Image 1 (cartoon, helix red, strand yellow):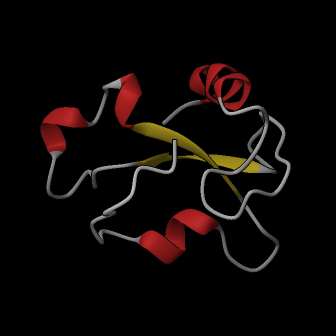
Image 2 (image 1 turned 180 degrees about the vertical axis):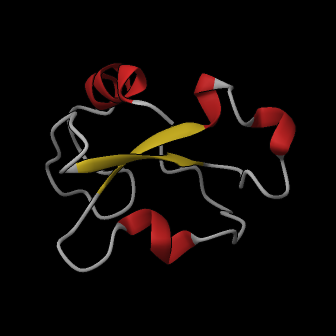
Length: 77
């Protein structure tokens, strides 16, 4: 997902990572766009805004890597 979505996602979430609750900024260095339902299993939701989350990008791993393609059972929004 590209940078144009980072700003509105961050604003909607109060500049907080959906998973770890750390402060994030809408740029490619501090955040990434994650999908609530995985792109692998739900490709038809790939471009749906309500399926996207702003998550942090940490120095050694980012929160979206922790989720991977696993299913979430609680909506972090």
